Every structure is written in structure tokens, then in C-alpha cells.
Length: 270
Image (cartoon, rainbow, N blue to C red; front, side):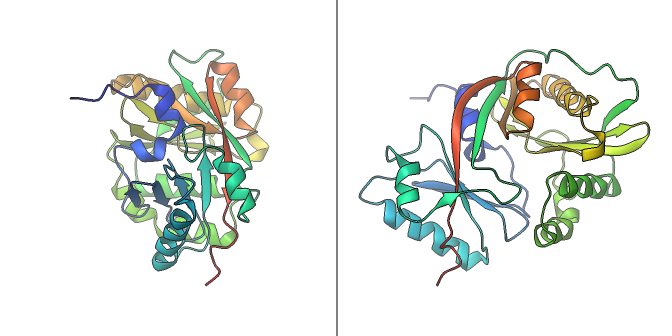
């Protein structure tokens, strides 16, 4: 029997598990009890879609840690939504020494959101131009803006810049694409996008601090909506942080659920 298609809400809660394409530089590991996404930087990885039991949770944590250590990763956060198991997973992780994530680019909580109609309150600022990246140099510039906008550490940034050629090679304009934004001709913003079944995941959008409040972020959302519809997708999904959530609500995104983001402080321990 064929399973029914996933709703946008289900995709929004646990998008890493449903991505249509994962760059070689990022890599994803899907196991029965969890999905693990490795970023290009060994200081960033995410565990999600946890389907453990109370009895095997400790074994699941140990398996995640072992896998990450073998791959040379030294930092991991768990994204815990209402579909995760066992029940009360966030509390159980806190009891085991996990802590709310506070080091950039993570925050202690995020909001899974979805947009199913054209964004409202589009930016009308004529000084803003948004277009897709067209070259390796374009993409390198987008990463540079992202590292500054997300306040990434030098160690994190080094991993991303090293992976730029590989990441760009995986941009096919269908499953994965990036937009960049200019304000008065100056590059000030970027936005990643990757398909996840019937939706497009906004996998990170950033605007330089001195260009915020002028409509650049809204313009990046609108551009990726238009591209998603052109490619035949139903809507946009995102894990919104505290800064982006009010803007996303303003343009019409709806809240799906709240997510706890917890860091495993014992990961680097032998």
C-alpha cells in the first residue's frame, strides 16, 4: 500500500529527513532511530526525527555520538519536535546533560513554519535587487554574507569556505539553489533553498546588520516563493529563529510547531 503524501506541516517539522538532495559536502545519515545531518563544518551537525524508546534512548545517544566522533565532528544539536519519541524527549535529554543551544548559528528554540500562499506585504523598496547566484564567485560571496549575518565563528566559517566548490557543484537550480540580494548595488543578503518533497525548505537566509529593516529579507522570501511555484512546489517551509519569525508571520507564514534545540555537551568526551 502506498503511503499518503506528507503534509507541509510534517515536512516543516522534520525537513532534514525529507530533503530531495543533500550535497556531498554536507552528507546525511538516516537510521531507524534518528536522522543525522553533517554540515561542511565539523563544528556543526544536527540530529532530528528521533524515534527511540525510553528503553533504548541511551543506546541511541551513544550511537549518535559514536557516529559523529568517527566522522571527526565535535558539536551536535538535537532538534526536538512533537513527533519525536520517546514522549518528553527534550526533558529526558536535559536530564542527561544536554543544554539549550545558545552558540551561533543555533538558538534554544525554533519555530517550524509553512507558507501555502503568495507572501503578503512584499517589499516595495526599489533599491533592492534579488537574483539567483550565477557563478562560483557569486556563491562564495553568498557564503561570506551568510557567515557574517549568522555570526559564525572563524572555525565554522573555515569549514564552509573550504566546501564552497563542492557545494556549488551540487547546485542544479532545481533541487538546490541560492539567491543573493543587493541594496543600492551592494551585496547585503542571501537565501538558501532546497526541495523537500512537495515543499521548498528555506535553509538559511541572512541580511547584513547595516541593511536590516529595509525589506531585504522579505524580498528574498518572495523570490524563493516565485521560484518554488515555477518548479511546481506547493509551498515554503522553514525553521525560524527569533529574528526571522516576526517577519515570516508578517508575510503569511503559519506556525506548525515549536522545536527545542538542545546541544550535546558530552560529544567531545571520549
